[in-house]
Image (spheres, one colour):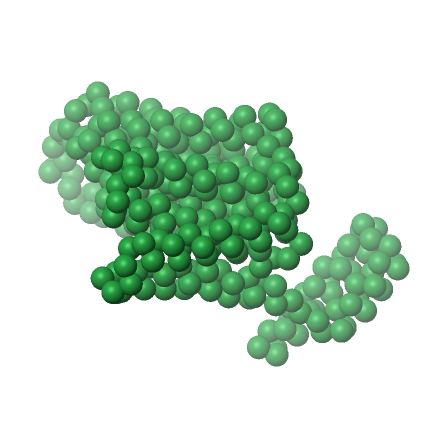
Amino acid sequence: MHIYNQRMNKFDAQNTKQLLDKQLITDNQYQEIATYRDLGIFSLNAELKLFLYLSVLLFTSGIGVLIYKNIDTIGHIAILSLLLIVIVVCFYYCFKNANGFQKTETTFDHPVLEYLVLAANILTCIFIGYLQFQYKPFGTHYGLATLVPTIVSFFCAYYFDNKSVLTIAITGLAAYVGLSVTPQDLLNNNDFYSNESLSYSAVMLGILLVLWTIYSNRISLKTHFNLIFLTFALHIISIAAISNLMHDDSLIWMIFTCVLAGSTLYFYKISYAYKAMSLYVFMILYAYVGGNIFLAQIFKDIDFSDIFEIFVFLLPAYFIGSIVMFIKLIKNFHKEIAE
């Protein structure tokens, strides 16, 4: 580790010297940077925030386990009352210390309060879900039990400027229209192939998220949230489209081929606009998978038995070439956005 730190310090010193040589910084600034680095100070900000995040997850998970294991002994009213008290206390401190709603990016004076917002929001979701499960205040309209905490999450995300809460809000919105949007659930629990309405709902939700980012840019409303919306939109649209490329109905898989092509083109442009490596990488992967399925659909009725040996011979070269091309595209993208 000591050798690694020495190499990193040497690398940083060389980069700083290059900035000085290009006259991007003054001699005085160069000396100040060198003096600061000689102090050997390093930041624990990321590590502390990670522990805070884990603390929130462990606390809320513990609440869930406590409810599950002691539901018969504690009583429903007692559990709901305890949850409500904790939620009210958390939100009280958050609203008391918040700077109020602003259209631009804002932060709390103390970073701990950001995770207090997250805890309050998760507990709110647990409270409403438990209330609906036990007492059914929304009757048989179970969608409302999802929609209400989703609305609360969107409000908290925009009021307190909290990206973690925003992901909960988008997940709740997707659940309201019938989707599961964790990576594993998207692949396993969403039956896009046999449920066309679910596929169209997924695509429409993705388009809605994209349109919201366009509108947010126009009115300058929390534009730093846009990458989160776009990431969800990319995954939802692409997976729904790819799932339907294997459909037996030629009209359906052609429609979703066009959807995937349009999505690929849009997110190719938007990844450059936002200089977002994550969008670019997943866009390429989805386009590659979709392109291969499309070719398989085109040639599925053709008999290649006579040239099967050629296919077997060329297949390794094809995949190796694909990997090389993927790496080259990533390097070119990184180079272009760095300039």
